[in-house]
Image 1 (cartoon, rainbow, N blue to C red):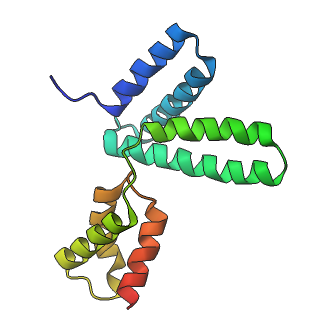
Image 2: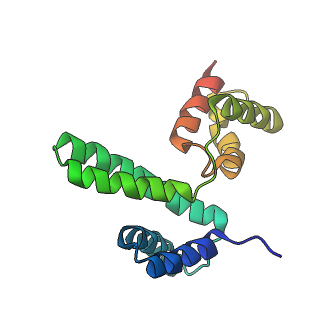
Image 3: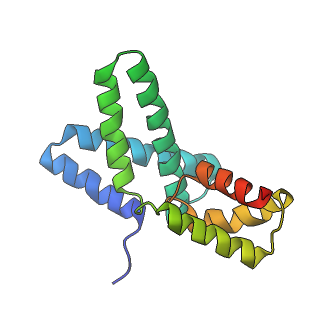
Amino acid sequence: MSQETLKQRLDTDMKESMRAKDKERLGTVRLILAAIKQREVDERIMLDDVQVLAVLEKMVKQRRDSITQFEAAGRTDLAAKEKYELDLIQSYMPAQLSEAEIDAIIEQTIAATGASSAKDMGKVMGPLKAQLQGRADMGAVSARLKARLSV
């Protein structure tokens, strides 16, 4: 039996949410599927799991930004809705790596690419992104890599 793709899992969850009449979950799953479909149409491609994870990461970042803004504006009702969506979106992503695991992968990648200075960031970020996509905040990984290569 083959491994179920992320899109198939989302599609199955959408149908289950319909049957269970879980409107909140259904709305969020549809939102995710719409974002995936939009990117597929825009780029005229079928997204694989890695690309779907990139869409999910973007949605997570948007939700975090919205939560911050809503809480600052005193709109706890809207912040709560965004938090629900954030939790649901994150449930489709692989488990996040620990700081130590991220540091170890950064060290391995630096050794494998022979990077020695901040000029080599691009050479290291490509392979790192392939390994860490969806499992770590790439902005934070980039900052850690820059600090490591600047030493």
